[in-house]
Length: 323
Image (tube, rainbow, N blue to C red; front, side, top):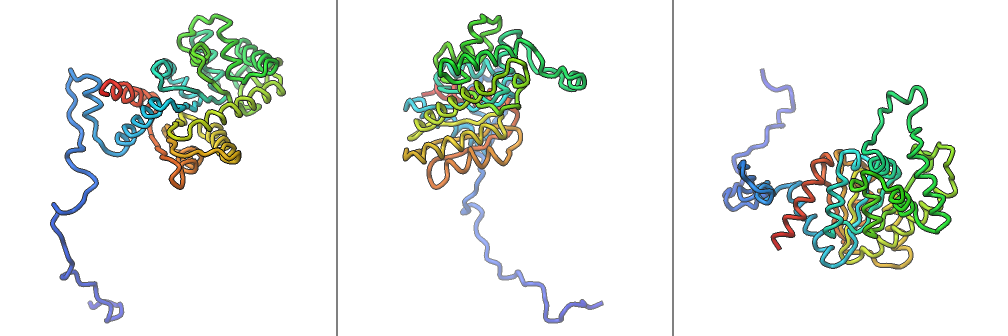
């Protein structure tokens, strides 16, 4: 049966299509970028070297190079952390990177304060919300609320930020597990630790000892302190957003605009977002907008923190050993 379409409508002829030699074509992937098999006796450096130099591995290597360059230039390497980073056991890795000069400041949301303090005090954290919410017991741990709220009041009294105040108060308790605490390590190393809270977003905010004025004042001090650290990023600094989908991307973007509003140049910066889902705000407020128009380079590394952060640490350390 003939076609029911317009008789003048014929399939386009392909007999005169121009072709070229495959070998002459520029391609994005070649065997030189492929992975090599892993041997049982391979070293960590061998393992990293044998990864495929494609996509995420390539981004991770480039980012590690930029972090090492920032260290050499004495530029800030700021780690913005969400509480999940603490809960998956990465504090020892970050503390080690701190001692090696790959972490020069930490910006944290409120959940980091909770989980890091509880780890330091009792060696465990992350309660079962489903089991305690029904009876109204979720978040009611006395020691956690008392520590965070008393530190906020003392910080407001002394004119210091919330992160510094909590680190100071936590160390004063001589906690049994201080070696696992970012708050303790940063305070002892005199590395800035800024805390950025949303009032009502953390368990300590509904304890009887909560003081909204103290929490607000100390967190605002930390916002201005982080803005100064961001100002110093000009010319090679790095900001890593690890596990915060909303609060820290918003805070970082406001720091960027504040710095530029005051007339300071902020170019040649590196930003990166590490998360198992690439959400709108980190991609927009950390990776893209601050580095737009030639102001720098942004990276997105997708994967679980308990895998990607040790990989970054290994790349930083092994890459340094090669230099």
